[in-house]
Length: 329
Ligand code: SAM
Ligand code: DTB
Ligand code: SF4
Image (cartoon, rainbow, N blue to C red; front, top):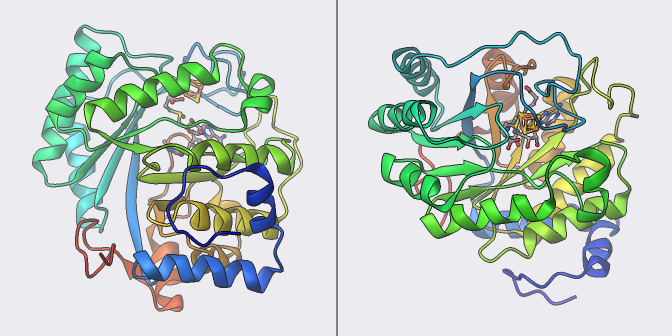
């Protein structure tokens, strides 16, 4: 295998060979890449907030917010700007450098809802935090307006391989996702793009997802790797839980394929042991979602995370742009 760091031409066979190495070799390779580009002790901290909850028309089989899934989730329309700013300021005082706001939409519609989003983005940007949004599909013009309002990053996941995608979502296509990602890139907004592991996909599907992510040029700035949160009332409620070591291997492979991207250990941490999370950090994960809640499901919470990082001799990155703390270059 070639050792050139940044590549966009990974074949499935190369990804498989990377992933299947003996565990010590895989972790050594991942750590080596990680240490070239990042402080291995620093973890970037993001806080999530659902600003419009439930009632989404898409049929994503994993999602508690889809109208197609009977999860008993309470719907909420928009949170007022002042309330969002208050929550963002709290997150900042707890050590988060990025505030990520999610809306349960298939796509953004122009008009008063989008104007409200733009006002929120401007207000959170003024706090000096990185603003991230995840709102569903966008047009080029909407992406440009988000950028102008101060949106730093846009989360839009590919979720799984192109081959397995249709088993999980039928109301939109892989191409729809790629199109929005292109608009976001064109607008000069950072890309946050990853997927979900543990939805009943094959290991080859996981390689397919990693290939799609790593062959984007440039690589996504951040890559959220979610472990499925099996929510009651979704069609994936009873799917088998993924083997923790397979998950760690995926994190390590993502780190090797995308050496300069933030690899975010995202949903599913309440079901991970501290030991599993520690292995993920050693494998190259260097970002988490903090707080008691993700969008609608529980997350370990500040106290647990602070204690864990302390035990590991690790710390939160003070500023994603602080080169002594997050990125070394
Ligand atoms: N509606 C927008 C969209 O789908 O792009 C934004 C919000 S959506 C909840 C953001 C991401 O959360 C999804 O792309 C999916 O990867 C992740 N997600 C949703 N439900 C999840 C679950 N039960 N477990 C793990 N990740 C989940
Ligand atoms: C991402 O990849 N994971 C976050 C964020 N992007 C928006 C969302 C996880 C959601 C988990 C299910 C929930 O809490 O509703
Ligand atoms: Fe959930 Fe987003 Fe899918 Fe809607 S588009 S069902 S909010 S993941």
